[in-house]
Amino acid sequence: MQLELAGRGRGINQRVDLRPHAAYAPVMPSPPSLSVTVTVTLGARTLPIEQVRDARIASALSTAGREIGAKLAKIACSEHGRTASNVRIHFDARGNADLRYDSCCDALGKKIAASSR
Image 1 (cartoon, rainbow, N blue to C red):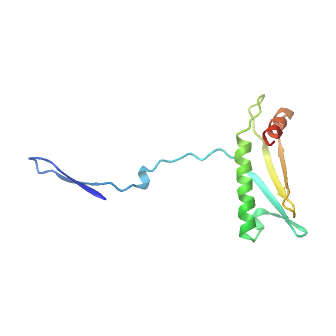
Image 2 (cartoon, one colour):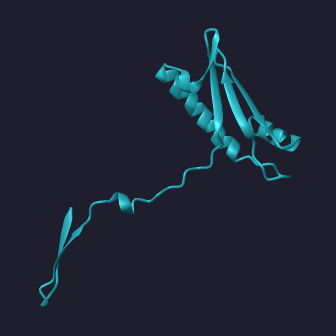
Image 3 (cartoon, rainbow, N blue to C red):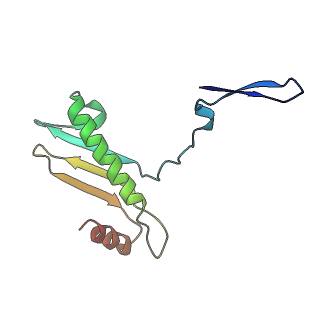
């Protein structure tokens, strides 16, 4: 859509483009997230999610890993100000998840456990 502006007496004609431009689009910062290693048991083999060929399974479990990483990034130790590290999640053949992580102290572990209830 264009709008034409005409000035009086000075012969100013200017066209203004009113279409939204990518340069003007607001940039939303991505929420903080932790890196999560996702593995899955398929049959008798345990594979990293990157090696799973079924896109439906890989997509669902990758999304679960990203969501868990985003949730854990928001939980920090009240004593040390640190978050969980070396976060890993394993999905077994039945779909059960086993979440493991390293924490700076027991207080962080208790805080994470309390938030998952």
